[in-house]
Image (cartoon, rainbow, N blue to C red):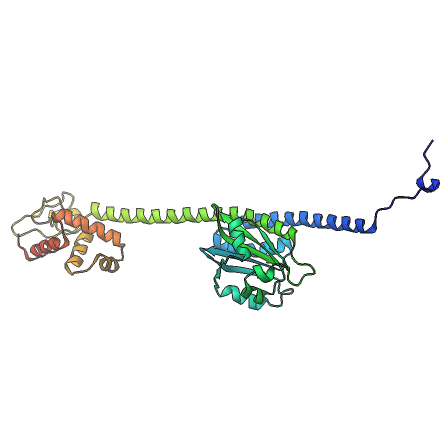
Length: 335
């Protein structure tokens, strides 16, 4: 036999208070919104992963954060020693009546000290996101920027790379029905944690590319110096009474079909100055420094130093002055 219902038995029917139903619905809605924000954050980070440089990340991260979490404004800043510098601001002009003035401030390269009472200073020390609500914005925020931005509350999170805070991300909801809250603090924390990984990877790629570029430049300079040493085509003229020694592959005592051989006087005949070494020696005799010679010949200063060392070795002298004296002796035909 089925039990009688409470209504049939005359017992009162328990009812859920309307307030409890409302609060439960609000919490469920907030939870769903947070889950959706996380989904959008992951999509934004996926797009940022395609950035090819740290500059591209700095330029696009504020917009991705604002659109993923529904913020009115988002800003990325750099931490430089004891100061922080706003770099890029994204704002919704339809909700932000002071957008132009705030953007001009960010473009001014202003440097903000990390003073003791600032919320940003706590972010550097604690390495975690902070909510600066309406109770704290008047005492813990940097007054000049708040006077321009007119933000009633904001969230800020650190960008941690290799264990150090290299920057911040700020966000607020100016012009929206509600200010930022704890859910927003958790969202910006999640976003910057993953952003730091992407930024670090881009930074490593840039370092590797720069080192590869430098290594290639050094190898090219070394190859140029080697070509000058191993492929001589013009030599100093012999001293009077000293015969030239020709190459067997050139006609009429001419090396390789080029100019007649001119071994360095007083040095074994196989020690020849190359065309570039002879040219460098002429500039040395003219009193030019290595830097000036490099500019005149459109080569690097390191290449000039290599040629000078080779000239000193072949002339068997230890100084530029001695090399110039030997050059003058040879030019005048004095042994």
